[in-house]
Image (cartoon, rainbow, N blue to C red; front, top):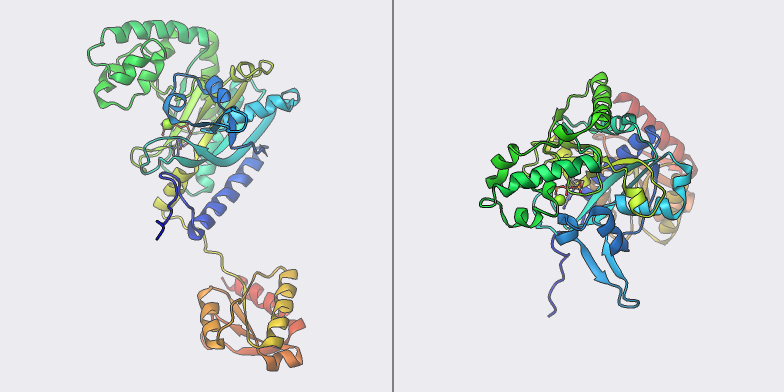
Length: 429
Ligand code: ATP
Ligand code: MG
């Protein structure tokens, strides 16, 4: 016997109960984004590997060890399953000349792939909602993109998600800080771990982002980037904070917030919850003014963020949120050849009137079909036997009211009766 095949470790099936949850979530997210003027864009899941190396940076966790890369066996091209969406989105903007029509507000929802150790809130295939705005230089858009989050948490019925912000300044300011940081870390050679040693001269800022408890104290005392920011960078940071204060959105400045991707400058932020254990960041982003130029486009300021869908869904569940399980309005029960032919016509006719219909398929006794009708959660059963079919009639049965009457109606009158009843029961609620 052949062995049963399983999904790839860290890549999950999303079954109907769960998938309906996702659809409700996505609807909320799409209408929230629309209310801020964001428009959808859909990029391929596979991109040329050099795109991510250039955009994300060679010395990052993602590029060093998390990418699913492979060679196209037909032409030898190096390809990668996208680990994040910003690089591909910016590539698309440049490729299609969208940058000439800036400013642009764009979003996408989809799978991302990272070869990480699977655990709660961390998967190898996961989903992000990515939001990018291209062509805005001022702190106003950063602030709006941060504020948006607060509204979404509200729309999703979530609370206790805390906002952390920081400024990474500009590349030249980072260079000065970097020199100071290297000098500082060099004094601690003996306690640095493998990762930190490897990054000491390539990407020392990333050492600050370490999750190794043994390095926390040393990192807390390290030179702070904010002390190296010039007047302009500080003013930008102030501008962001002013809007947040005006809007009454509480935040903490976290000087150690550096983000795992190299393309960020100035504002960076994370929304974090303590209800999901170690994987508490549900939304993260910042400004990336250098990226469009770095990928071959005309220098264009930009800002964006990404949310982890699995983590947000887990948080909604944790907070007791359940989307209403969608039930059909009508379940059509039928037996006999004439009845079955009429049942198809009835079901389509009801759908024409905007009624959700589950047509029984697969035969079986009236009794077993009625059981399925009950289990479906439908409000009504429409029951058609050959007797009814002969006279063009059907039984309309209320499934949600004890002992409720059963009506015999002409099939052409069914829709009106059903709609009338649905409206009545809506008013009662
Ligand atoms: P982390 O520090 O948790 O690894 P990150 O800095 O790598 O996160 P980003 O690249 O900023 O994450 O991605 C944005 C969001 O996508 C994260 O805040 C998180 O919610 C989600 N995310 C990232 N990696 C994963 C993953 N492997 N599984 C599930 N969600 C993820
Ligand atoms: Mg990560």
